[in-house]
Length: 57
Image (tube, rainbow, N blue to C red; front, side, top):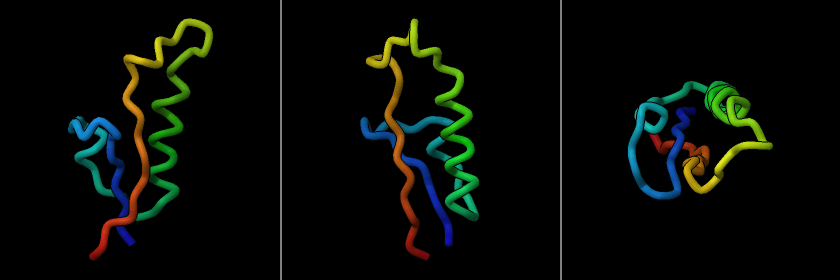
């Protein structure tokens, strides 16, 4: 199966242009991205919200 990451605001970026061979690969990237945000000083309004989707082959 192939997985993709979409943004809820329908914008494209370097994350949304990638395809992943497994859910875990895509999840690991999202985890890496979100771990860079410090909860105490994050402005979540400036951060895009991502979701993982399965791409029909």
